[in-house]
Amino acid sequence: MGWAWPAPPQAVVDHGALMIGGFLGTLLGMERAVALGWRWCYAGPTASAAGAFLLLAGYPTLLGESLILAASMVMVLDFVFIIRRQAAIFTLVMAGGAAAWAIGNILWLIGIPIYEMVFWWMGFLVLTIVGERLELSRLLPQSKRKRHTFLAAAGLFTLGMLATLAFPGLGECIAGIGLLALAVWLLVYDVTRHTVRQHGLPRFIAVCLLTGYFWLGVGGILTVIYAGILPILQGHAWLRTALRPGLAYDAILHAVFLGFVFGMIFGHAPIIFPAVLSVRMEFSRRFYLHLLLLEGSVAWRIIGDIGGGWSIRQSAGLINGIAILLFLANTVTSVRRKAAAPAGAPVRSTP
Image (cartoon, rainbow, N blue to C red; front, side):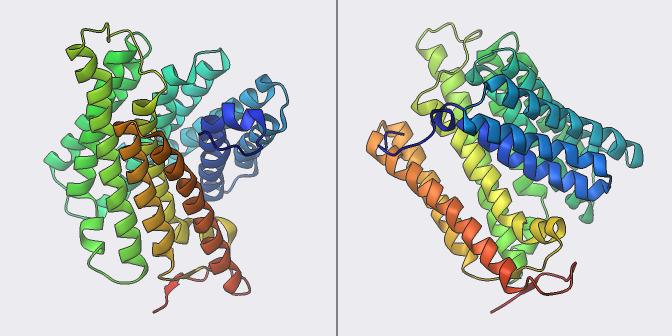
């Protein structure tokens, strides 16, 4: 981003792969392994973490890419067993997310530029998250409209991913419409509409999720504008041309990957980390600090991208990183505070 700081060259080149495959792939792989309880399932997150380490250490990229691909294949296999246990729309959607990660990794391994296949990596996270939210929405009254609108939104996004293989510009535009449709569905039907009225941890989670849904919608709108509307108005051959790296590309990806995905991580961490690590975690209002820092810096970054303000984007990117580090610090501090408590003890809220 222009900061004159020392960094391994591969950390810059493979930034997206390290975050999506190395960090998020490992995190979700651990979650699946803990849920299934079989030792072989841990091979997935172990492979993705090792692959990320090899990329950072400067080993031949083929090694790291192959290990991350192997991790995604293990996750696909995880969902084979999950669907055998419970075949439902939400498990099929999450399995589609795992398959999207594997397909994206295959395209990456064979040398397809990341900007041409990044919507497959996006599909991994988006479909995983919306599948989990669909599962929780079963607590609310069900209707055919609710189910059909979800399938239509998820189908649009999936169709867009598939179309990027032959018509990148058209596929991205369709995927953008799907992102916006999913954001609207989540805002209308998700349980956060009710839990945001509560206090303590439930309200914090709801605020994280609702702001995440907003950024998912922003990412969809920006995708439609920059991958479809503007190229058409400018007379470009947009059907077969993927959105190139640049400021608009940066705004779209970070609206989704930072605003949406990390909003979900911030909200779910007080539940997932204790379950995965078998520790107790105490909620504190200071969690709102890293959330506010993230939301403000994402908005500032997108403003800089859209307005062409390089210094704005540069400073916002730095604050993005600080927000994530503050989140990690707050999380670790909360876990340490109750590390001696019995494993599996419930999360509680403090004033």
